[in-house]
Image 1 (cartoon, rainbow, N blue to C red):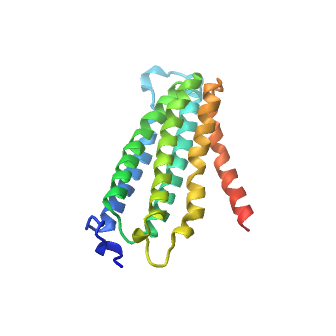
Image 2 (spheres, rainbow, N blue to C red):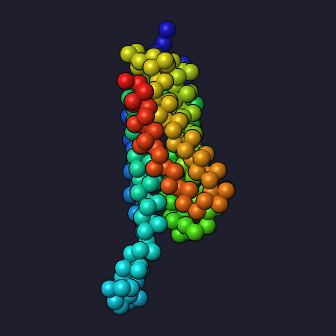
Image 3 (cartoon, one colour):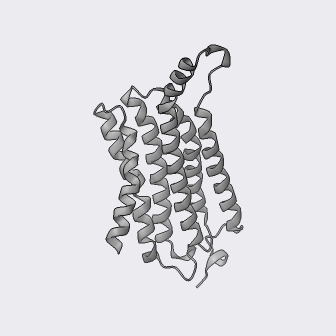
Length: 208
């Protein structure tokens, strides 16, 4: 039986190149998030009161920045964990990863957009839908690897990916809840992502 790069479906180049590109996209997207925190022109603020009001006006943008940054970090960890369990990649996996990276590159824009229109519930759907797509594609990658055993390193089995898939499914599930709340008119529906650490804690507690 052929394994790793000897398998006929292998695309024949080092897995490290795919990992380097993915890590770079994650890093760039996480860095670009800060550009959503626009600093007003210095000449427009003359007093300490005006400065405080400006900072308070940036509060929604800052909250969305923090949420998106931590979620991107969590998705990068999930992707890294999956990659560490793989011996090689094939063309189909690489194609799925292309769509993942494309969706990740949109997150700085959707984060800024959602923060700029925090009083409009529907604006949050833009960010939540983006996170749903990214989380869904990442989950698809986990499921694809679980169904394609030759991609796994010999010390791992498809059954061993179960916990990782459960954790990866949390963000898409929370995103669906956030979209539902936004469509019901809840203006701060993105606050639902604060449930993610609680859900992870509960999952760890159940496994003990």
